[in-house]
Length: 177
Image (cartoon, rainbow, N blue to C red; front, side, top):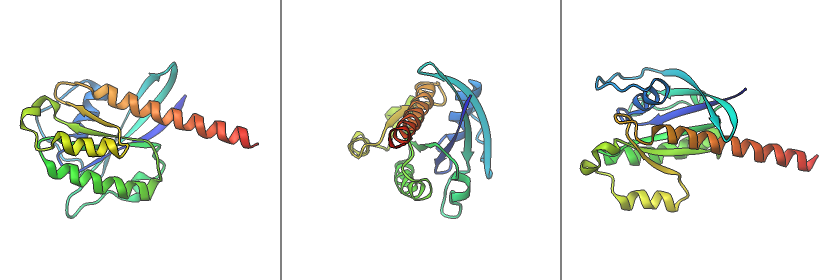
């Protein structure tokens, strides 16, 4: 069985913990619980006929005082970058955070999730802002931890991208031998 470490990163209160809870346990709670440090969950998936276990590292949200540490990211095969559609500032935070994660991990697969798709009418994040990220090559998804809409698809897509990259690396090693 293949195991892959995935980090959930983003500003405080964007819904990282809620996305993990919805994906792993199929639950949602209106009660906000701040993650302190890191919370680890796991879930086994079948992706393109193969079994993979995702080790989900839900990292404490970033703010002016707290930042994601390179040591928490170490060993991750990919990450999910989360923004809150109701707060445009969280997308700006995600953009800056993504650059720092690349510095720590290199160019590993990631998916950017704009959470709270069930409240799209109140979003501060515009379609134009999202389009700029898509043009940069970002895999951008809109999901709702509350309703579950597109949550599983986000994790499956990241797992698919990680497994594809691992296969390419293995093929490259075999071809150069």
